[in-house]
Image 1: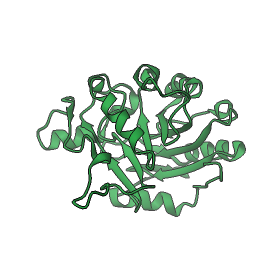
Image 2: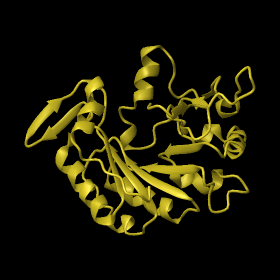
Image 3: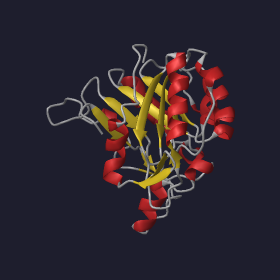
Image 4: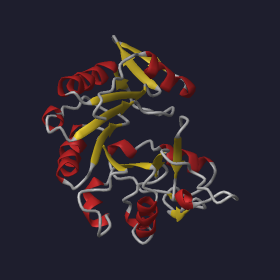
Length: 246
């Protein structure tokens, strides 16, 4: 994470739901240490945004970007009993910007608090779509739900995706793409990344090429890229760009 960014996992553990979950990094890490990745438990950082230092200040300073639930899914059924407390913490910390990435956007409206309205201004809801099938299912739900700030993330990117019509809505602030990590990673092709980039450029939507993944194909050649170089190589590509509305 960059300076001014914090990772917050109020609970850990998840259940696979779609094609992008096949080689889930949470499963890999948990299985490596002998932990059941489907055992969903609250963490010691459950209410991290509300924790204070000895002098009474919040441990997470104002204006920090907080990425929530990256070792699970915010809208996971197993966390339904805990989510109300989390929403309350998010509401209290209006001085933070929370990003919630989910493969379960279909559960969104049954999981938001009663005072959600058209969305909390300090919350970005980011729906994943790893292929065309999931894009066709999830993005319409994302567009029609009452959300103040919406993004799309295609990671792992498993094929070319066409969502030009969705981008024309003007409701999507950013699209992130990235290849799959791990030695069993599926190939990410440069042409897919460039095609999605062009769709974003045409629609004036910000685009972020996050990482190449372990196997990246360009100009007919497949490159295997070490984990510590995947973000670096994506940054060096110069493909990312940002519009002021993001």
